[in-house]
Image (cartoon, rainbow, N blue to C red; front, side):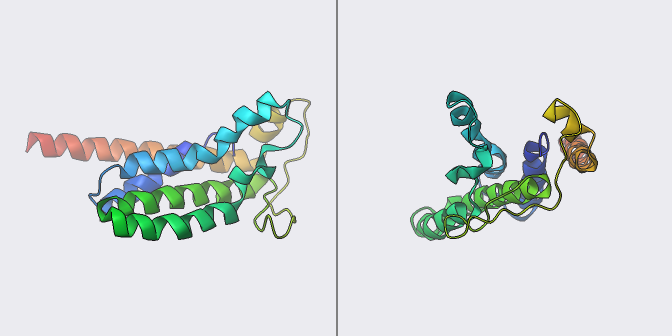
Length: 165
């Protein structure tokens, strides 16, 4: 996915905020939805020799193991922050699922190096971005972005109505 991680995080956070008034749910979801891609800094610093989905920051089992350790600790030490922490890890996993749509992911790393992806985006054009933008999966990204925009507009209308009342 190229552009839909942050909008998907927004949709997730919007749904979570309807269930919990815990602090920082939106921030947690937005950060979690893009955090795995911060490995792009390292990717570019090292000359892009290894696809960034091969880094530990894109291993779903790494994030699951971290959640298994972190969530009980947050629940015990800072229960007020538990919903935000849970949404953070949900957003990270949403990122992994979305990446699996059109890019190979190492879902079982470091135990198994098999790559999983729903579909392959062929390098039809010399520029890989153009190949992605003209593939059907980019339509899915646009749908996610449009949904996030609709959710934001509806939320804004509700907030304005509540302020007037």
